[in-house]
Amino acid sequence: MRSLPVPVALAVCTYLRYVASGGLQLTVGDSTGLSQATDSHICAQVSDILAAKVPEFVKFPAFEDAALAKHELGAIAGT
Figure (cartoon, rainbow, N blue to C red):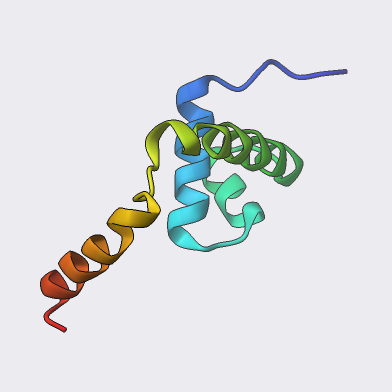
């Protein structure tokens, strides 16, 4: 028998807690009342969704701009 779907807000919070704590899925599941299997499924789903969004939100400088970006980041870091 399948259980009810996990609400999106709970899935995202579960994933964020797992990633932020570096803990075990079982520990995160204990705090949310979800099983380890459900936590594992949630983490895989949310991770895949976020990974698919990387090209949309993460941009790397073009080759010509890479040296300038390196210089600017070095200035911020104080090197």
